[in-house]
Picture: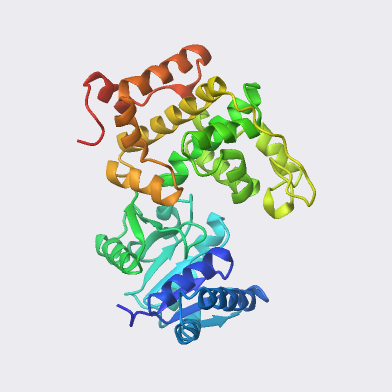
Length: 391
């Protein structure tokens, strides 16, 4: 399959990462971005990355040079997609704006052959809505990488409502051949990871806004439970602007379901330009010489934090399974491979006992009376039948 030419539209961090993955798999790659300097910056970033790979002994100099030679860097005019004419697959990795994406896919369809697959790397927008701009929407599919694309193994394959099953199968086979771990997700807001992961951030923000614990303590409690990063340091790494935008997108896409409502404390950080590491300040202070508060390392407090967050996460996973977003296997695979959770959430529920998780949620619902704690019908059913999610 390496004779397939891969096009990538958008030479930002994500697009250049996808181009590197495809080139590493042996494909000729067309990386195009209409913004002045974007393609050149991607070329420089790739050169630095390859130099590090050679220095660390992971690639020979010849291998690195051949990989770089497989990528063609272009700066076409806006709305000029003719460079992608020979591509058998084009992956769009541009701004998360539905109107812009629809216009882009209309142009890509006109520039490519009928056999070419047109894919979006969108993290939360509807593949069906994007495809609606095309005469042949059946050739459009979601291929959602996680950042950084060369490092993180997970890729969500997302068919739209009328995506041709052959397009879905060809896309998954190809990305599997690139050494990635693919999961199949239905075209629902946030797909698998960005839907199920919302409570990791949301419940932590809720606990902070209640005054139950400070941010450093909440992060400490979640790391004690096995997570590699706490929710607040992870939000700062992702970017509070990006994380808040995804939260808002999922909230709106679910018809303003209060379960997904974004939090005011994060909105205020975004309003103030405190995006996290990239701006020097966010939930924590990353400026030179800055000191951040130490967590309160209280085991009882940790028990009031981590099991609560984990219960809400498990509930989100159970709800995703209930609504057939993905299989139980793919849900757990997505959360361990995509966001490095210590365990698959449904497997975690089996270990804790679904009835135990349900009891925690019911107590929270009785205390707060809010939809965010209403147990998934499937979790309630599994607990009542005393059976696991995974046979």
